[in-house]
Length: 293
Length: 196
Image (cartoon, rainbow over all chains, first blue to last red; front, side, top):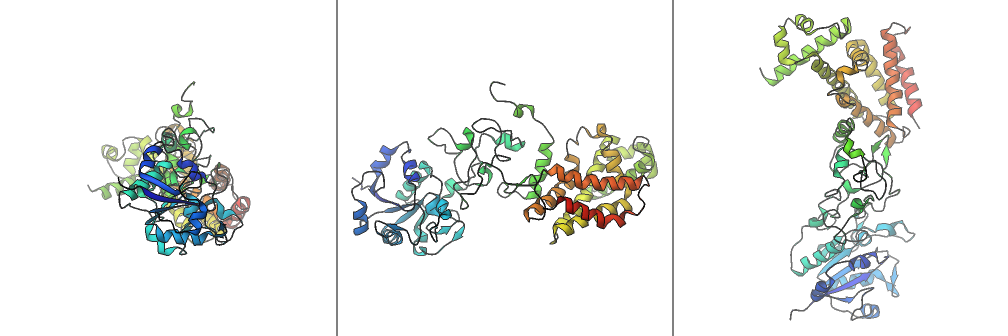
C-alpha cells in the first residue's frame, strides 16, 4: 500500500479560521485515505505539539496558518525557529490563508514586523527566502477548502502549478470574484439598488463589493457547494488580496461619485464612458424585485 | 471617397451648420440653407447626414469632443487643481470668444430643444467626452485633497452653470466687461466654492 502524504499543519498568529474552513471539505474521508496530519491544531494526530517542537518529525508538506511576527513565541520558543526547522524538512510549503500569506488582520496589531511568510501586504520580504521556491500561497479569510485540498492533491501528484506573483495557483486566483457573480447584469447596467441579503442589485457601486478587483474563485467553486457571499447578498470583502483588510468594508469609497477602486485593468476614462452610457438608460426589469413584484 | 475625406467633409458641414444655427436659429435653418452655404447639392448633403436631427446629434458630439479634448489636455498636466480650474475657465471663455457658435449651440440648442435629442442622446451620452473629463477633474481634485467630496452633480452644476450663465449674459450684451476679464474672479469663486 502506498504511504500517505504526511502534513504538518502549524498554527501561528491565527484565529484557526482556516483549520475550521478545511473541515467543510465535503470529501474528508477520501482526503484522509491519501493524507495524514502528523500534527493539526484541532484534529487528533500521532504527535503532540511538544513532539513537533522538541523533535524533528518527518513531513512532506508544511502548512502554515496565521501571521508571522519576529517576537511571536509558540510553545515557549520563537515561532520563526519552528518554521525554519520544518521548512527545511518539507518538500513543499503552503501558506494557508491571508494571514500566513500577507500578514492579514494581524498587521493591524501592536506586534512588531507582522507579515506573511514571503509578503508583508504586497511587499516582498526575504526572511525566509531560502524557501521561496518551494512555497505555494492559498490566500483567503478563510481559505476555500476545495482550493486547499485540490492544491494538496496537485502536490501529491507532482503537478507543476502555474503561480501568480504572490505564489497563488492561477487555476484559482487568475479569476476575479466578479467572474461568475449572479449580479453581473446589475453591474453591467450600473444598478446598485441593493439591500443586504437580497437577490437584486450590484453591490460594487455603493455597498463596498470588491469582487471586480479581488482574485479568487468564490463564484466559480461555490462554498459548501451551494453559495457565495455575493450570491447571497453580501459584498466581497477582498479577503484574498494583500491589502486585506481594508476599512469601511460595507461602503464603496468614492471621490465625487467615482469609485476609488475600479475593475482590474479598466482605465478610468473607459469606465466613466461606459458608466455614462449605461446610466442614461433605465432597465425596468432590473429595478424590480425578482420575485413577488 | 476615403474615410478621412468623408470625415473632413462632415466636419465642414457641422461647422457651417453651427454658424447658420447661431445666425438664424435652429428651426429657421434648413438642410438646403446649409447645402447652399457650402455650395453643395441638397442630395449630396444627405450622403453625409440623413436628417437635420441626426446632424444636430452629431454636432453636439462634435462640440463635446472638442471640449473633452481641451479639458483632457489640462487634466493630464502636472499642475494643482487650482491651476486646472483656471485653465478650464479660460478654455471655456476663450472658446466663447473665438468660437461663440459652439457654446451657443450647447446653451441655446442642445439644452433648449430636448425633443430633438431625446432619441439617441439620452442622459449624457452625446456629451460623454466632455462630462468624463470634468468627472476626472473633480475626482482627481478630491483624491489629492484639494476639493471637497460631494455629490457630483452638485459640483458640476456649480461649475458649468456658472460658466454657462456668464456666457449667456455676454451673449445678451449684459456683461459690462469682456469675458476674459472675468477669468480670474470666476476661477477664484469656483475654486473657493469647491475646495475643502
